Amino acid sequence: MTGHEQARFAIGAAGGSWRRWHAVDLAVLGSRLDAAAAEGRSRPEVYSVCGQRCGLAQKLGPFAYGSRWLTSRRCERCGWVVAFNRGTVEQEIDQYAPDVAEREVIAAAGGDPDLLRRIFTAILADAPPGRDDEPGHRSDLLAHAARHRPVVIVCEECGESPGPATVHGPEATVCPHATVVCGACTFRAGPWAGEWEGMTTGECVVAAPCSVLTSLASHYGIAVEAAGGRTARTAGNGRSAQ
Ligand SMILES: [Zn+2]
Ligand SMILES: [Zn+2]
Ligand SMILES: [Zn+2]
Image (tube, rainbow, N blue to C red; front, side, top):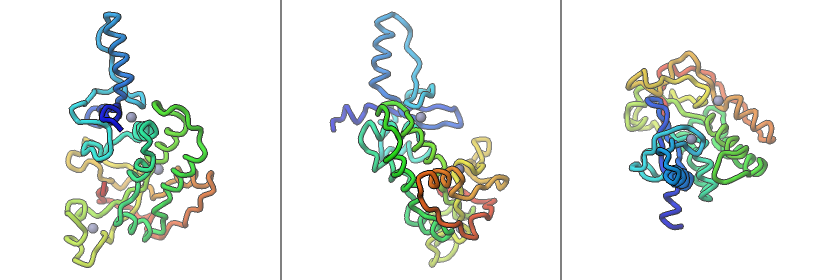
């Protein structure tokens, strides 16, 4: 793969202080810029792959795996389109895979750490492919599932420390107060909360897998293990591990 192909998708920012990182297709933008210049029109507005008006942040490098800018706030819809275009679907699936500690917490709560992967695989085998450079049925359904991914919430002390052993003793590999919630359905503090942005506030804690994932699993005939007793507990002071 040439460097040119790698750099087809740049990072775009939209949403102000609620910022999300999107992908901007430079091939599309380039032809729109050329057309505008040829017709003497002013520079066209920039749109992301998923259709958001956004600011081009080309100095942040390409929309690619390993980008330090894309470790959070990465647009799921843009992510899948870029993955299909570049043939990196396996890597895209891995983006949403829980790490070792998160797997432990999900399994301890009675959940299946591979449920999201199974749902992705079922959608990939079933949904109509469509074009590989714009959102379609398949990429948007995958993004819908990805937004409802399970998120591990740990206690406030763990949220602020390098690891659970520092807080809960050398034996602790995971926070004993950890719970698994839906990252989309659970209410979390926004930019108005300053340094507490991303915290759950207790009013609306939705255990994972939420009904979006269980509905998809049911549609595709994927067995969902019964949730354990811990999943319904609220995590009032929990801070997302993400
Ligand atoms: Zn997007
Ligand atoms: Zn959800
Ligand atoms: Zn803890």
